[in-house]
Image (cartoon, rainbow, N blue to C red; front, side):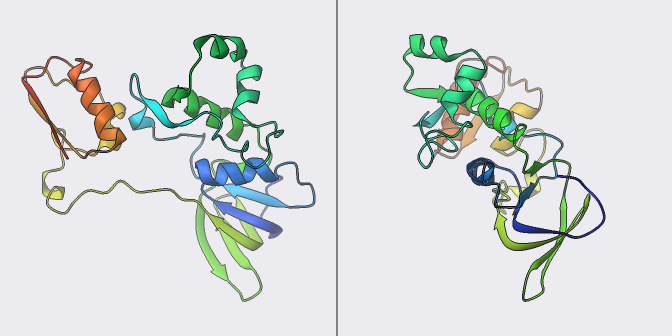
Length: 219
């Protein structure tokens, strides 16, 4: 979509390009009767980069991708990704019922950077409803939209009791893979019993960040 300072009229504007809005964008990309644009402030697609740890898998089957459940012939299915990336036969030989988080992240990025209705480096700065349309101001121009799809994702939650202690020694799981960690000889506690907690616990247990003195998992 060509960028300028004039207000372009959209049938649908999407705020944020995570898996939800990316799914919507992929499903309507071929619908030429719809004028849509999905705005993302980041320069490129990124999906929980701090949690792309070793040996971490998706909790759902690969068929639960962006499009297959609604449109199995859509060109942005996970199987299309495998064929395009020449991974199809290797995937069949592996007989996998689930895929790694790294693989799913690559698939999402592969889709996002092909879609004509996704615009990166475009941060939405304000939205006003006029009674007839949404006036949207972005870092790349102004738009009017008849409909709005908000998919800004989740923000890491830190309990109030932990906030005063945030440091290199106390941090949210979302930052785990974004920094160099050395837990050698340290006592480590993982708080939270979800998949992220389990993935981090197993990586620490396997010595990914050094041999720890002790390891506890609180849930």
